[in-house]
Length: 263
Image (cartoon, rainbow, N blue to C red; front, side):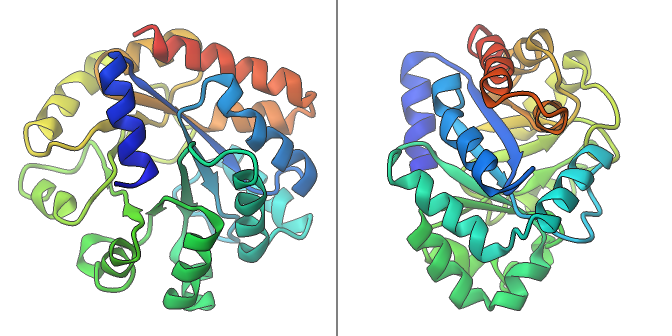
């Protein structure tokens, strides 16, 4: 059982929904990023999605693209991202960390080498948005053998023909992208999301977590109410980008987690 599996089992026992927070590793620079990440569990975050900076983040909107640029300009690398996770693990051995990004940096590192380093750093799962199920032998299956969950994205365009293929080797949870398009592009609607989550849950026993377009405590509560939890990324990254003190960023995160947990 991974930390992700254990977390969802614990939340289910408590009758609670999950709150997942995305931040870009190294944004705006390493030390501040580490402070934010270390503070997330205390702000009610159940699972941390740690963005891996990349030069060509095709699924991301301007907010997260700029966060990646800031991190890269501050010297962030794949190795330093894993170092950040290692540092986090010194004081927190229970909160799951999902590394989210693109395949190129992993490929450049070498899959076996990367998986060994990621496991040692305390990474629990991967979301690699540019590797479709047809490429499962490339990273998904090796990752699962190494004890990491491989989390797949389902979208409004994932029809009933495609869905079984998407779910085939997915573990940990299913990430439902609530809108078509890039991150931060539109607002999620619980009315639209609810039937899609039900459709996915009919095809898998995995938790279904909804992300994209969630930016307020009210929206977090509404989306968590029709799913197993909510993910917020761009809204949190915007707080960091504004230069607000870490405590203020974490207070905003706490408002979002309170929303999801009250669903």
